[in-house]
Image (tube, rainbow, N blue to C red; front, side):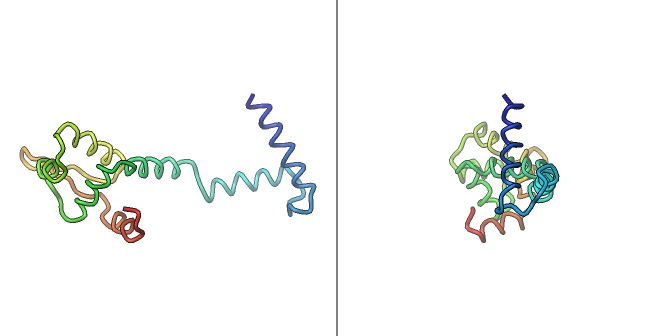
Length: 131
């Protein structure tokens, strides 16, 4: 199925390059240009990283955690009270945010504190009304 699909794409690209609508003249060269454009403008690795970041922020509880941490670093028990969450539930959300590189956990004695990994990044999202 994938080979047939690629053949259809190749045919469409060839037809496009034969029209006055496309400035490219040779389909194979244009294909290379398009692939380079994708690498330069939207490389797969950055897209994967950004997807993980935004996926981590796609939950209202995690959004609240992040916004609270913009005010100050907090112990897990403080966050539990702020958000009226159980420790296992909160830990689950904290783990997702930490894996996405949004927050850091630091152990101080027997207490675990959470802080923003990149406060400026979060502040910029707030300025854009995304948080």
